[in-house]
Image (cartoon, rainbow, N blue to C red; front, side):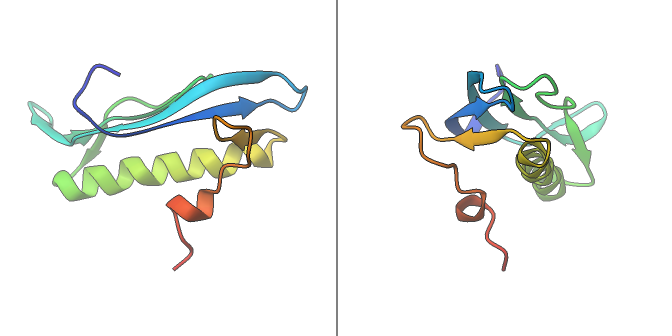
Length: 101
């Protein structure tokens, strides 16, 4: 990601067939442009790494919508039979990043 990154974590995507692919979850700083506020988030290493800039009414909304997209992707990949691991091979705890409260 070439935008101003504000958060990054390296992971390993483990596909249902056992293949492991290095990945990165990254979020950029919300920015204001010709189309208003937007925020980029990506899950590098997945075929659908991110939908592009996520628009919002303001910086906070665009950021929270981008993080929501990350959360949904982290829920969707295991639901399809994949697993997310940290760089040491341990299970990646989605709840540690997105607590249920």
